[in-house]
Image (cartoon, rainbow over all chains, first blue to last red; front, side, top):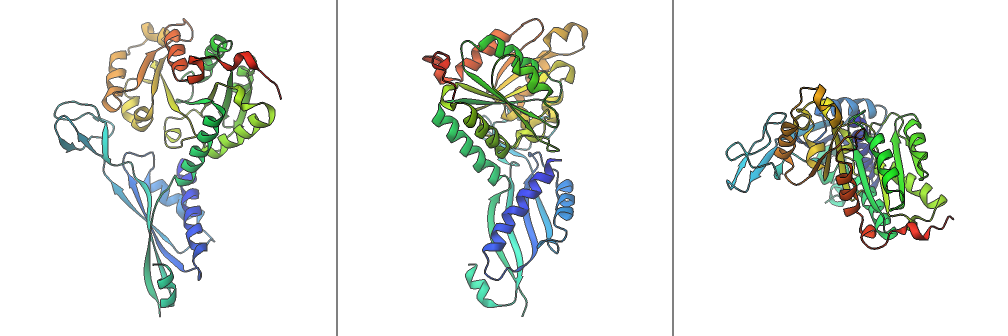
Length: 126
Length: 236
């Protein structure tokens, strides 16, 4: 259910960007990074995005979600390891607890792909 | 001519909520209030814990409660019996409190009272082990409850909640003799992802562990270390 709220936040952030552009370009793709160690389910996010962008400036936009794995660093072993979500979070070698998460907590709007008719608008977006 | 362009944003999806949470925290700090966010699945015992807490600490600390509930004021009404301000926030269909809702609660507190008179604001979140873990509301510490009837595996299944908790209360300990539950396994499952949380087994029914919880709670409140604000109440 919270994917609805996340999508709302996503749309508001993209709208802020879009409204700041002088020529309101057509957005074709919104790229997200979603870590596996977050409470967000990409499938639900896709669905919420589809529903909530109907009849809006994002109607034609596709949501592209890049998932990042949970990777932790074990300070005892001095190496990275991949905890198995739902099963085992401690280091598989030495059983030290999960403390230093290097990847998997991301919930980020990476970039927006858009079409533009003039080269002028490109310059203003640099 | 059609050309495709890229704009790099790199903005966190929860950016707006986080900003709101930081704003709330700045208010709490300015008022000298400690805020705790209390989270669990539905029925783990948040409200009864608050009842015990209010009844034990009401004389020592000046406490207000922000109560998140999807549709009712049932919990808020239970807590109002303890003569503390209880601000009820109906979250509607939303399954968690966010920083904006809590900001609305703080405005109410500000209207009806002098916020600087308070030592502690307890936020009772909506019963849910998933979303509240991602939405900060401006708290100084997170408290999670896990009742022993929920099973040993819940920390493994809802790791974000248990990883974020500063204090974990294992509740309904009085039921332990009737259940096949391994408390040590609950603790070791939590420790896999959270080596630092204070873990306290409690029972609101028998009182087991509550004194330890009250001590932990007071240790979070700097104004309790000197003189509590209960002496100088000034209704607005």
